[in-house]
Length: 190
Image (cartoon, rainbow, N blue to C red):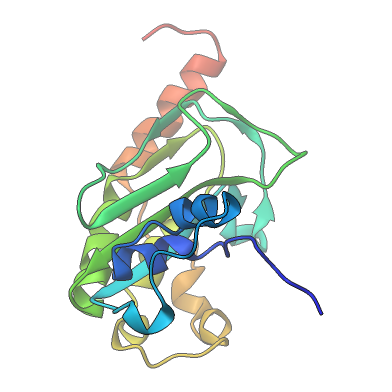
């Protein structure tokens, strides 16, 4: 028989919809204390969604990337937005580790509310210096099929034309960021 005592990677969703800190619970149990609640005492309220912000290129078969985070601005955390990260502005994303920048989790009373908060959080998220999946995630959350909840594991393949279309308009911030990054790389001062 095998026992898995680690938290699963999606634990922030469970924590947001229950209001309990399961990392704290794991420390309590490891210290010999019983679980603070039994399964039947835990109630779910609301909806939470988690995405992973990655240094990858969705437009090149999701190829992982590496490099320096020349500029990183995360959305503000609040009651409905949570960020779990281990990197900061100017950090290096290495080829020796997972290229995840952060986990971004949003919560709302309904799925639609959680999606709306995610859309805003993704707009407020800025990464400059390396390829990332923010544009792709924005497209997912603006996709009507995703918003209706009528999809399966073939969602990306079935919607590849809209999710991974390179011809879409360039975000103004992306354009300015590219110019600034290029000038910094050439040694120009701003």
